[in-house]
Image (cartoon, rainbow, N blue to C red; front, side):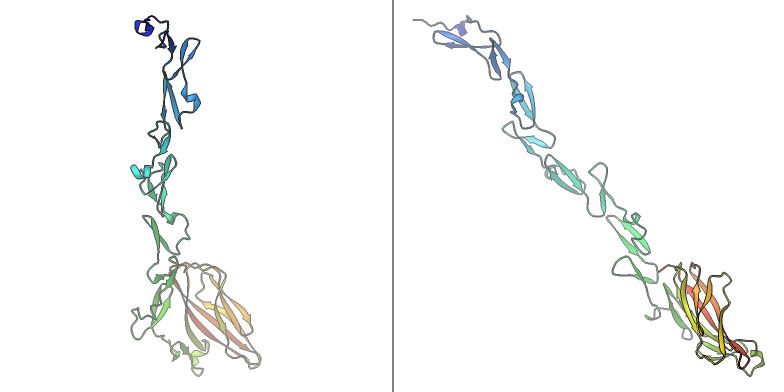
Length: 324
């Protein structure tokens, strides 16, 4: 018996979309991979409908292809996707790269902030955040900052506060032997020995006395005592800054305290705090550097012996340049 190969002799009735498969005594019409037979026609199978791909699927006639989202690469099985470690390959970040699933993020070192492009880092100006970051001056540097103090101060361990250097105590001054070194906030003052003008006599390093037997002393304060003090610039007010008190209280006597001179700007006043004492009050903030000399007078009135006399404290106030 002779079998006829209908497929080889093209004597079959398969349509052009089908494949002719010879069988014993006949043939069958079949479809190629990627197609399925329906009512005598080979129709493309949409493999993408069945989730053949892990991420992206593109159907093509008789087949399909899988692709991956950005940040992934296709594995050898042609279907699954694997994360790309951009930090290990191209490292697009300027400073620190952190790989994430399907992507990456850039991070900046302390003292830097990420720019809008998400890649570059720019210096963070910490000094612009607050005027209270440093007590005196904030100096910005790439990735950091530091506080500095003016001459006459040192930076404390907190790295923001300034402390006065006592030049007199450390003998870091320019005063000559006859002068007295007086420490100020941020500096020092070389104070000359006092000079007692006629008819006063010098009785100590800081006191002048007008002898009672001298006729020229009749209307003058009995003593002038020199005192020095310093205050910081812009000190909050009102502020009690100096105490004045009589050393002896006599029967029948009372005391009047007043600012005799130096208060032309009305920046101070005397507040009597007791029968024999008073306090100097600063009423207005004073901006330094500045030197002020006040004559504080204590008037003694004794009605029993019909006596009236006075003594003066010559107070020299040194206002520093800075508020610390």
